[in-house]
Length: 313
Picture 1 (cartoon, rainbow, N blue to C red):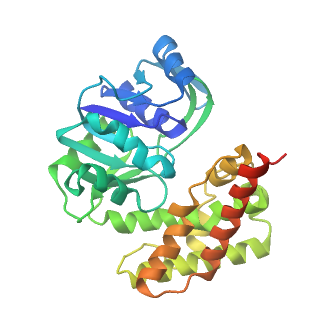
Picture 2 (tube, rainbow, N blue to C red):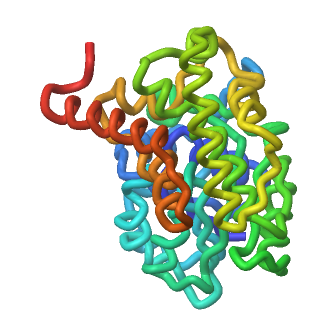
């Protein structure tokens, strides 16, 4: 299977490199030239279980001249989704499938606007990665599941083939007949901790020690659960505390959410696709979401502060 990753940051490199190692024909497309050059020159270094290994995989700074592929996996920051797929449109042939593995909700609609809804499938992954430097990534992919599925709930040959390609590389993957519910399940975890960690600048070890933070997190997730129910979405969480606790499972006390990392770097966050997605869903189905609306406002304010004055000390 020929696979192109639009976005070869920590997660894109970790998953893409593992798929290449398993025999897939992979190209990592990323605008970070130093990263692309290091991969092409030296190979991609994957650090897993405390040991490093080199993986030979192609990398490119753009989709120009790459031809069409069987699968395009989108893993750029949410706010770059439209620009990425428009630039990567030349990768899309008559039978190409486009799949987002990004956090949050709403990416599939953006992708469908550009390539057509019939080409788009959805996915969620619990795999992770940390970018150490150009061509060097800590890969947290083994034993962590990726779930994929058709937006209409059908179980098709094309999603089966993609799951099989992941499995051939030793990556846990399964096909879901309710990928929308799966996406909301993952959203609850991001809603629970992302914005609050960004606002408070606390890693998990301290975030979970503040009762007032926990109360706010549970209130935000309760709103998300209510919005999902009113939208006719089935989720697996029985109550708000379950995703709050799941969010920290298996992670060290020093873990920092991606939203916190973005704010610390002075860059934009994916708040519009996480807590913002809950607010939009609430507006559509008549569910009040004051906690999520406030979290969005706070993060947007921090983004503006960073844009005006630079990243925080």
